[in-house]
Image 1 (cartoon, helix red, strand yellow):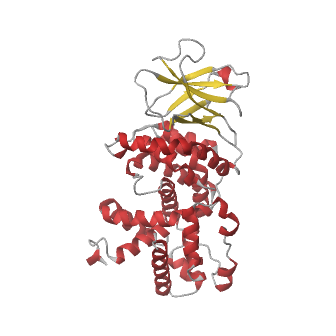
Image 2 (spheres, helix red, strand yellow):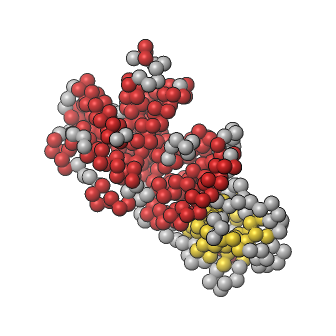
Image 3 (spheres, one colour):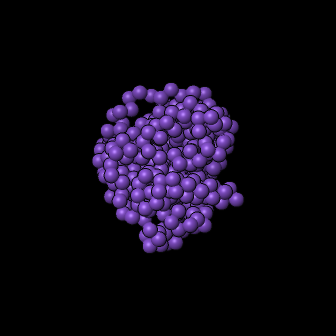
Length: 185
Length: 232
């Protein structure tokens, strides 16, 4: 699924939302709500909570559309960040128990790599990100994924990987810097 | 860490921004970061840059069907309009630049909708109304509320004429749906007698008419764009 193909349409609609154009919000909603709901659902794991957060996401879009700057940001990435941030904030507010399955070398190896069979549907940005993620240590990549997709904290990751918190933190930070330098290459 | 708070380029701030964007921080740490995002524009840019870097990963997450009730609940909450500040979106140059790109993308938009909606039961009818001169509207049908939302994607206003939306069902006879706006999206209620004609394969067309709309029951001005409704 390549929402990036909608980039100009969504950017134009966001500009109109900044003017208080409700129909434009409806357009953005129709184009993106299923995708953003998928993101909320993945992080929160529960429909009711994900539906509440999805509403908050679009209330934020309605209020903050003027902050979106198309010269700096992709509209899809901007919307994705709002959805992820609201979902993770909600997860933290609920203080739910994190996913507890241990992450070890075996888990890292068996971790699904969706890019292989979905390459045709992914944007260039997604493929580039995957290429850089692939250059990371498999365990680090799995830890980043558990944080990004499931909202795991450092504490949860340290417990799942059975390493001290400080070690977890420096591993993730090192992996993030490596990722950044690969993406900027 | 507090001693480098005001050096936005400090590696520590970049790492904090990365940790926030990744989603690995605790609730308290996130609140502190969110406060800094509101107060420190340079720090906010670091966070935004990390969000832009990581967001494409979310394409790996499948879309999920949303209950139609959610839009209704949401719409009910949006009674207050946000205040628009003067900004890039008021620039004519911006809209001109967008015009060229958008007409071509309207078709891609419909294509992407196919992918977005393959897992959904409630599939919206959409039409990209494209014309040779780069005019383009994007229409989405809300069947539940019997309305059509029409967004002027790349329509350049003509001061003497107004764009009017027509439904052309399989019998080929145009039916007037309503006037459009060049500078903002409009939501047009679908007349009860036309609702049954708004189906897959029906065509939406836009013509330029005198102010107030076509004086007859069919288009009198040039048809500047058309596109088939598709149920995807």
